[in-house]
Length: 421
Image (cartoon, rainbow, N blue to C red; front, side, top):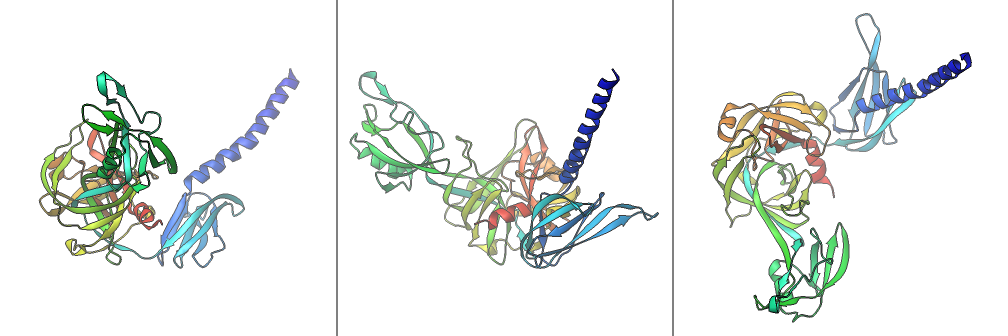
């Protein structure tokens, strides 16, 4: 009996010897940042409650780090303070150590130039052209004597992008209709893109007695339009960011791969107030004939491009706030919900997260905005968020069951996406 107890005790001690350090390592790693962005010339302090130190990688001329202990009134060391000194624009690695010996975590560190952006908050029309034709679905074609066929079944899938037909670029739906009509029932060679991979397939149209034409039984889309809000523009480059989230196709649910796009003036005509379970909406008319800018990228965290009418937006530029500067508490959003005026409304940043376009949980507290919209409504996505005189991010989503609350994304995240090649 004594031997069995001794074996159990030794097993428990052995497991504890492995498990406790592992849990400590995981806990410390979780408390440390996953990445670090700094502004050139602006020192940043990283305070911890543990004896953590840091060292940079080979690019020591990008960031310098120094570590000093934190102590209370009795001179007991409570942890450490790491001072990061961003020397010049560039990238490097930073490794954190426990007790100046055990490596805990290595992260990417980036130093960006001092950046000021013009917060916009203006509602505009957005028109995006897909890269090729987006397949929405396939169906049957009615032929003679109540016979039917589904020519594309098993060949084309929802979400496919049709790029070429018989070697001809598919610039719009009309071009594709011409190719099918002129096929006289002969097989058509298609070049498509499916989940990033190009593929050649062949489809054969059938004759529709009802429509007196050759058909494929295929639904496609070549463009999409809507209303959203410009978050910012850079007065040095005229580059802009808007929406704070990507544009997804309503039928496929996938992020649209675009060929090109434009932002154009819009005239707001109505506000559909948000209620629990029913998100509200800004309704308006897109005013064609004048282009404000060209859209070049549609990403998970916004659309980006270049303004060709920068004089339309004349607010003063503000410095940006990096994510480590953003605090839980009062903030404001700039939004255009009526007429031409962009107004400032009070909000509260309730919590801070870590990515996926849901970096901040926000709540509308401004009584004027609550009375008009019920909180956050569709069309307000992209409204800039400002805190302590700095641009910190953009409104992205509303909580359907609580329209007073929603999500925001960091301006740092939007800039990273805009600057990607």
